[in-house]
Image (cartoon, rainbow, N blue to C red; front, side, top):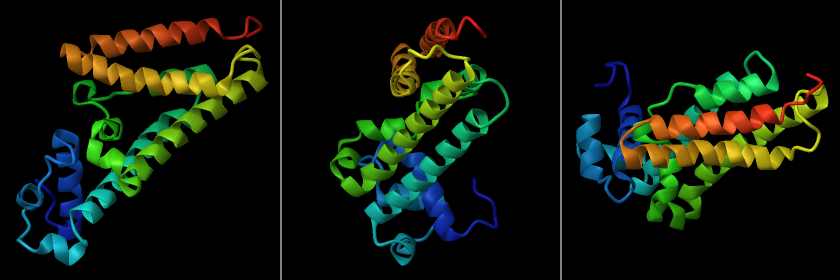
Length: 195
């Protein structure tokens, strides 16, 4: 499952990331982590203080990867609209849901300031990054000056996160895709007519 060169601590982090996405915090037992990582009993406590410490490392890694994936398209070529469109349409495993967004539904993570912090910081970063692109578009005349960049960014993030929920509930990515098309249609109408 993991490469031969991967250290035990890396295997533990990767196993925890996968299990958190699949089962949530409560459903992720130390035994399941060790089994998935192919690590011996006590390995977790050799590398981490315990399950919360390992979960925090896994959540931080997942958040870093989400930011990097988003930045690849948001920082890519194209107009501000095209970059937001690229973010909304990028390839995702829609039926699995967002590995960061799903953590907000886990009461144990939400109850822990430490475990919740990387989730909140990542979603704040994403809203801020998208708001900056909208501001850039307004300054360049691509978007109408009446647009509120923060509200547009919140709508983009809400569409993606809500789209995951709708797709999972229906068992089909069609609901996610419909939400993306709807938002892009509204955002396209907000493009400046002088463009």
